[in-house]
Length: 471
Ligand SMILES: Nc1ncnc2c1ncn2[C@@H]1O[C@H](COP(=O)(O)OP(=O)(O)OP(=O)(O)O)[C@@H](O)[C@H]1O
Image (cartoon, rainbow, N blue to C red):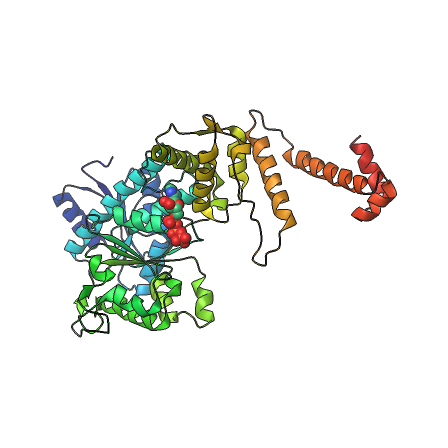
């Protein structure tokens, strides 16, 4: 919980700025601490409990950007606002990309300073609540779950971005939770009471997409019998998510760019622009840089969208989140079915943790729903998990190694899940694989060691030695 009086560090080499700032903070009931350079700021952060930091970019010795990096390492959740007199937008954006909460241009305007500080303090509190909620598992349907470091750092970035109006590009594979991230940005933002509207740019036919987004006037085209508001308008002062933005047709890419630049739009068949009030978020599972190279996506729109991006890591990069996700999903399924939640046996959990999840969280949801429907008894074991057998690659060829990889991962997971994990999991697993391989070759060659060594591409003496090792 945030204390009502906040402690704010101001790092600036101009004493005049520091004292004006400190006076303002004191008037507003906060406590100001002062550092004259970057190194001092970092020291203060290590020693004091702080709620926000204002950092000047140009300071002697360690400059603001370097101090920012150190502070982010020390206390990733502490909001840092960067101040810059010489700053170009690039410096400011670099700072924001490197984790600054926001930036302020000098000369400072006290009202602006107040507004940013207020947001920073709220985001600090929101950040704590996102992490707390994830850590305690008190999540509802709409809440992003994740305990591991990858999701924790995503939560922090989300918390920093909740209250800005900036466009954010949300990147990640299919089913990874991009829309949920967009909803979270909205839910924690200032306009959470306003609507959240998502448009899947890939799902709406090109001919309809423009009027769907911007609306149309009556008679704008045949079939437009009534004036209709578009989704941009429907989002009001809330959030519009352009999902699968990589699929936006070229004409609309140009229009969207203009809308974002001018913050106004025109419904089809109308010439009076309307103000864009909503925050626009975009999501894609494509590599937009490649799309730009291939000439399918506008470079300028890409840069506009990509100024701030959030990458949602694939599930295979965060297996530590699987138990809590699975628990949540099973609880939801149980509520839907009016049953008690099933619990996962350790072997099932080991198997889930080992699976590579090409379809990410959505695949996990589907697997658990399928398995829960057919399960008998109060728990799910490894044999109850109906993992998708469809391991075909795009060309329809079964990859003979995918099962092997899966088994190796499962073997490792279950060794590590044992109450006393062995010290040599590498040798244990490799030995088992080797034994299987030699055994299979010997069977194929009716027990002939010469035949098996030829089949495996091993020297006869090597095979014999291995057989002795395996007794
Ligand atoms: N971290 C998470 N915590 C809880 N639920 C999650 C999480 N990530 C994803 N989900 C759930 O997984 C499902 C897929 O997520 P979502 O639709 O947000 O993915 P997406 O990346 O937008 O997918 P696509 O690219 O296919 O549109 C949703 O039901 C969502 O609620």
